[in-house]
Length: 112
Image (tube, rainbow, N blue to C red; front, top):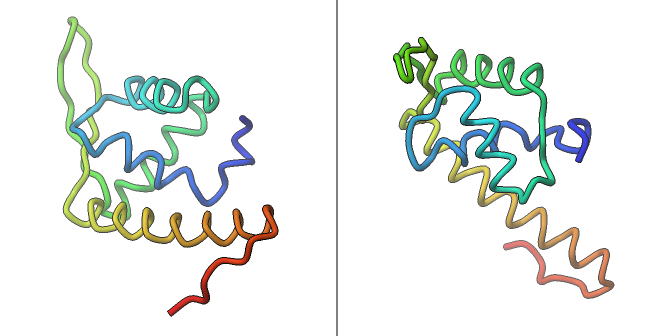
């Protein structure tokens, strides 16, 4: 899947892979790849700028850690990030229900 296909969804995907706990940058890339069954395989040039943007927005925080003799930046959700992920999931449910209804020709119930 190309990065262009994910516009508007990348931040939510990154927040979701960080929900279980802190990950360093490359582990975030691997979690996206594994969680999507290999369908989403994004380059570091896409992931790292998004992580930095999420950090500037206060949705994730980071700290330096050392593992396997290497210094790495580890990212984790903040309380604001958890709230943003909840909102993203709710929005995705609504959006995907509407798109599915349109593509299948089965109208969904009107929005409240």
